[in-house]
Amino acid sequence: MTRPAPDLSPTDFRALLDRAVEIAVAHWTRLPDMRAYTRPPADVVTTIRAEALPQAGKPWQEVLDRIHREVVPFSGGIGQRRWWGFINASPHPAGIAAELIATTLNNNCAGTSQVAIHVELKVMEWLARLVGLPATAGGLLVSGGSMANLVALAAAREAKAPGTRRRGIRHHPKQLTVYASTEAHSCIRRAVEVLGLGTDGLRLVPVDREGRMNADAFDAMVAADRRAGLEPIVVVATAGTVNTGVLDPLARIADIAQTHGLWFHVDGAYGAFGAALPELAPRYRGIERADSVAADPHKWLYVPYEAGAVLVRDSAALQAMFAVRPDYLAIDNDSYLEGAVWLSDLGPQLSREFRALKVWTVMQAVGLDGYRALWRNDIAVAREIVQLAGAHPRLEVPAQSDLSCFCLRYKPRAEEPDAFNRRLLEAVLRDGRMILAGTMIDRKFTLRGCVANFRSTLEDARTCIETILELAEALDRVNDTAAARDVRRG
Image 1 (cartoon, helix red, strand yellow):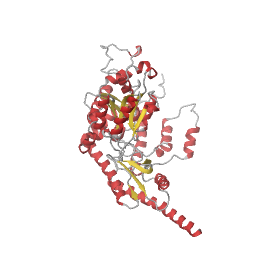
Image 2: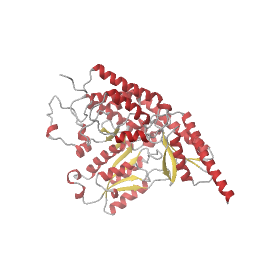
Image 3: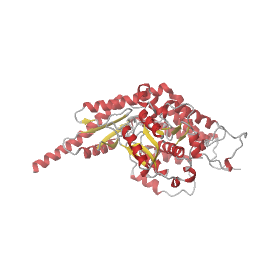
Image 4: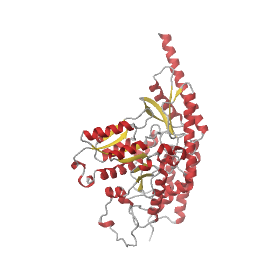
């Protein structure tokens, strides 16, 4: 009988992987110094979007060659030494290798007795240790911070408003409310809306001049909302805001949450792991009291996408919200197939990829001492950028960071600053030597970046400032020339 085409012989499978490795190595080789971002050409986009579903399959060599031509050159650039535009970390090579193996194994990590489940349980124990929760905390790996926060808030809703899972929130007599600062990640709003609490169920607490939640304002809001007939259930503190990388006053928020009987959740998608850095530990005091923490290994643990994590002090809260065991998954306790735990009972997914292998692999390859060295380097690069910007008369630093974010603005000679800095960001993106992002700080348009990149050096920090000044001064000279011409005409 002829084998079905996908069932390659070991020799052909090796040839397939050898070609894939060749393409990957070529990309890895040019990655550090390639353009930080290249917009895909219109003809490539048109070709991909216009293509009909193939009637007959193509040889894998032809398909991989097309990936090499049309996909890899326009991959986005994450891992280039000055990729700082978003909180996208460079992937550790050991994680890339582990991802290949995990994909080949193709485990469904929902449950049953399999090593993959025990690897994930160990990973969650290690992650709990990094952020300061007890090793007995439970949780699971998910796609990223958005899903981690959603899962944690779903568990919190059921814990603080028992029965909403079964009856729905429409039967709850009061408006359930969640509290987060105005600097909280947008996924908190989406989670609150998905959970049926409505946008009105999210109460945004003002921040202080450094961008941290105003704890006194939070305390007052909870008390006022209770008097108004609302039912506060959760507070979300942030450990590493997206805009500036600062931490909310976690210990103070934990105190207030305890006083009012709220679930204390920490969104540490970016910054939670910084709790394991001794010199930063005082800023994280209070995270060890959290009922739940969201953290992303694919950010500051340098694990390839996707790898988010939700940690809960008592995993029974997750089971109360998510556990379902239909007949087709019912396995006797003494069955050869049954395992210690079904991770699908702790979250919304039944089909779950073997994310834990790449996290486990990278954490072993780097180690705690290695992570501390990498984090210190990221922070040092960001602070060098800030220091150089603060020392230059035409640059300003509108916000400081606890972690590895940086913010800066150019002060133009004539043009309105916000409009100028927007044009400057566009010039940076087109230039390609680095990638930054834009945001609003104190209602001012600001260039921002986040260093989560093991390739970044202090020399890259200097290149950053030199590039910004070069591009900004070119734009400024054009404006000066135009202004002078207008004056002469007048």
